Length: 544
Figure (cartoon, rainbow, N blue to C red):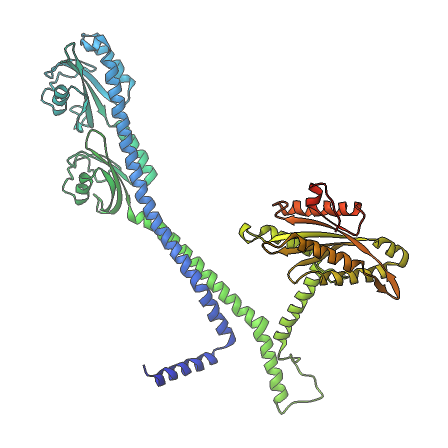
């Protein structure tokens, strides 16, 4: 773009902006000021939306892990029960009648148990807890593994012949005297606990809970409106991903075609998978609802602010400006009558600047009233306390050493008693002026009340204690010099108590108390002198 064209565009923009009214300019400024806030709120709402999805992902994973942990606990309990049963002689020897009775009683004790049985190493049933027909387990993989490895084994999920419900079978070999397998104790574990857990998890998550065997067949599903239990879903893309990993989170189409967030875990010793899935749209619906509500609130707030400013501008500023314009137009018109008052009353063109100047003047006046001693012009007690509070709030690395000088006048009360308060006030005013001249710019000098004064000296690093004594001596000499009030020679002295902060103590309040103690020591020592707190500590209250 050529410089000439750029200049023309800039001038055109300036011309358009000059035509924009004051109210429109203010509204534009407010909108620009609110824009970052609106963007921030929208970003936070979008982050909340992402966090809702992440919480849903983590929630499904934890619930699936909870189901897998429950299965692990059941298997451990089964193993413990079988180990206890192997210690019962009637069961080890498979004594008819007595063995069956004990196994029936054990089955009634545990809600997960579908039955117990004792088999010989070839898989022939010797006794069991039910009256079902005898079965031979010799060709079952889990049975052969238990006999061959002589250890506790658990089968994959099986479908019960009578109940038609999925279950697992656990086998524990009983070893004879020579270490060979003499008997095999078998326990059937049904999925009633899993159905209850699945229903509970489904209620908590609002989704579905499914159990797949190691081949991808659905063994249990809550809820199951499509009737998928018993169907093999190993070819489904999502199920294949479940079967490839032990645990994790998957997002994709569910078995019912609905996009879902699915957390899964592997059940111990079986290779089966428990899957907790929630509909992604349900999670996003709540997040989108919050986003919509938040956006609506922000738009409402912005409109309220803009509308309020529009009205306030009209009432507080534009109406006055219109009155000024009307007055100016009336004065400029041919109808002007010099003997008639202007209506509305004219307003001085610089009224706004005058108001601002008046506010600044009022602020200075209020500050003087609040923090200055009206008689001496020094800082008052309120200003002193505020200054002390600021010193206390400073970070340790920014603190500067302070010398605290508490000053009390000697012989001031007789001046008031003999010559009146007028003379005493004049003397105090002169003492305040002298005290101001004794300190540097940046040091603090104030009147605490009555005839009590305080000076806070800022000490540079390495500044000798002699400097403090010199200032104290200068104050004593200056205050003790004669004061002429109405041809009356007034003589007043002073005593000074000195404390150092933080060298004497790190607590500023304690340092102030130390200076007060040193002042009273100076009074007792004969007045007209300065005493440091360190001298009190050493019992050497020497005067300057």
